Length: 608
Image 1 (cartoon, rainbow, N blue to C red):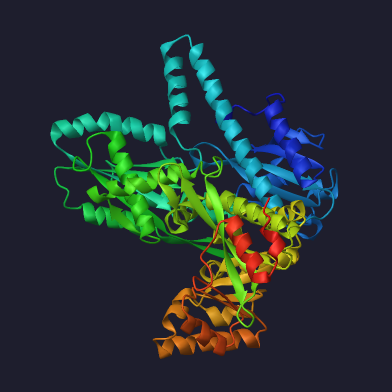
Image 2 (cartoon, helix red, strand yellow):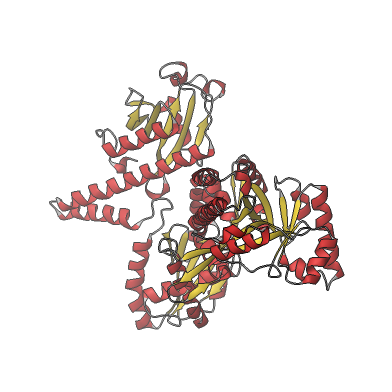
């Protein structure tokens, strides 16, 4: 903490800006950047508090830095640890406290960013995320300040000893990861640059191992940065203990780590060493009452077989880890020459990042018909990508890429907005009772602001919530049923309808179905395709229809392609069907013409 050179320094606008943001964003009267010294806590920045420091013995922050993650005291009067604290019984009469530890060099906790109130409080999930985010900003400000001070001192050093001291300090700050204490990417690349000529000269063997945490962004979003930081610290500790003295483990960035394994002239133990790394990268982490099950994908490349320079080896390990993740969570994959062919997916992923911005995405719409009357009741919006050089690309090729890299979130918001805008246009032309269905990726379940974004979209297009049908996948909902139920209930307040998509392909279907506030189940096309040829498939299908009726849910069968399928579904009293028997997905104007013909609205053909 003393190495930060912050103690007893004057006010700085950057830190004061953070505490003002904390007060404003959380509607708190007091906020502090507090450093915990041996006998006192000292405030680098303070809002709403006159004192510049308090004794450590009465410090809330001294307790906070001894805990994992945020410490929250909702009512100090009722907390036996703090009820008699002089800061509670006297000025400033603290009743509420929430503090996030600030991590210094080598992962040590040196203080907190905290907010306080004179009345009891609770923090919402959103407020918790804000406080974690501000604490991360304070942490980075401190690190950058240290770098600037060391660089300035080095510039003006007047003897070799001082130059050596400041050079070492600056090198440590620039080449060490602040959270885990591991070497960072700069040090890893420097180590590889120096090592590779030696390996070539000695004809040695080495392996570059890339370890990437599965679904790290989902963990961060669902459980706040506390869980993410704790996970990374624990994984770094485990990886460090799994390598030999001559090896290196570095944090490459985000949730990615690299292990550099040196074999000398014998690579026979490589399988054992890789298995050890794989074993330690799959673990459970207890955070309060929650248990996080962590899996990691691992890809590796070998020197000199897979490359003779640093960039080639790192790129090859990156391709291998992406292949490991495609195979499932917790995969271990070597680089292979065939993986270079998959580099096209990487280039496609790169192009996808600009597809929305460049207007390359478009929506097609597949009608859904009431089976009894064969009249259109709704349409489903399906995204297509018109690539500038590859032509029209189907969702099966790019949606998995978008799911993997997080682009599915902005893409989904774009789809919802464009689908609502199109339906609003149709409504002005006389199509008033047709609903619009859009798919809701499970990644959106952990996205802050989803419900508000949908509410704003409905309001912007003057669209009744009852005309928007959100299709959620069964497997995505089952990943965290409690979170799914909570989100669905919030969405239902907007009066939207919710459909369970691909029903029957997930797990625990019937046991959980009663808990979800859904309106419709969509029978997966695999059951429709197999029901005429398999008595077992038909029996399962009949069970789904019977269960849905008992629960008061509508049923939609997708993938209906033949009259025989239609007739059987009619006998089983299915409510709604969609499929090639009636229409393929159509561009907007073609779909509008289909709706006009089906609903008998001849004047709608006059398209704007």
